[in-house]
Image 1 (cartoon, one colour):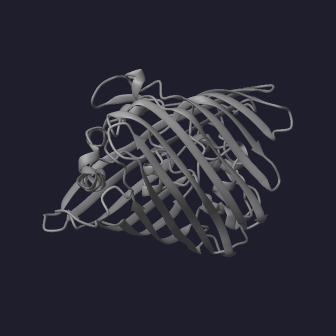
Image 2 (tube, rainbow, N blue to C red; image 1 turned 90 degrees about the horizontal axis):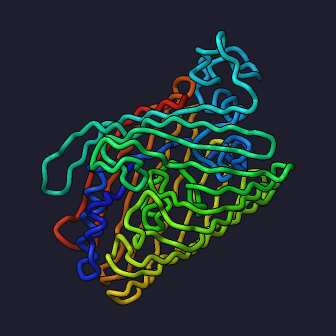
Length: 412
């Protein structure tokens, strides 16, 4: 997986958009810092069209509920026994794999969790030598306290590479980060949840490929793309959605760089294994950090999740991206991806996926990406993932970039 380096992006200018895109895409492979990977949109194969049952965030990602922890033990990991699996999860489903159970029973009002991810990244640009680098991608802890209708939720962690958009400290490297922290109120039936604080921006498919073209172009990645604001989420039997008023990222300075506007999505479950959704986002910044000028940007699109048979899940998103910077002409581009996740046996996934990005600023055509991902949930709350990828650029000195990524993920 990749993430666009913020320092390079901040220096991008309208007059050199194509060169900037190429540098961003290649540089992101080398300088990535990933977020959590606990948002599995392919859980629709198990008739889970919503996210609030398993996640504290009603639109998915991050801290798991007690039910979500149980399901991760029962349906995510590989079952090695030849006997009929138990319908109840074992102690490994509990926080810290149940190590604390003899000493501490988690009260109903408290949720605790965490995530660690380390990776080895190997890349080889066309005409250049291969390079390898270990990356400590994530080390975060999560907590939520529920008192009646009120909830307090937060995450805190460490980032070796900075993650400046989520940082609490202001160093170039080795920062303390907080990707989310919010207060919430549910209205009694668990259908509506009102939240205020730093939140994941509701838009499109919330998947673990947070640094795909779609997530980066719409700026709603799970690594550090969160915003401060107020959001109302609804979760029903067939309909779910969330609307957020964006007030800006208050871990980003100065204030003129902060975006303000709205973002939201609405998804309907056509069947227990098929869902269709729409998304919309409009924000304005007095000095956009990508264009270094006043800018209003928009993103509007559709997304779908479909399991024609239980082992196979199709995930699709397509969005229009509109930019209106004060220092250049307006543009309308498009971005999208298609992923085919196949569960060969329980806990073993093979997923080819394809992505496209065309920002329509130079007429040279789109940038293309192709991935082959293999993911094995080989132990409780643990998976090992291997990705092979290739990027093709429309013009300029960088034509292709090849590489692979192997990462180990442990969620407590």
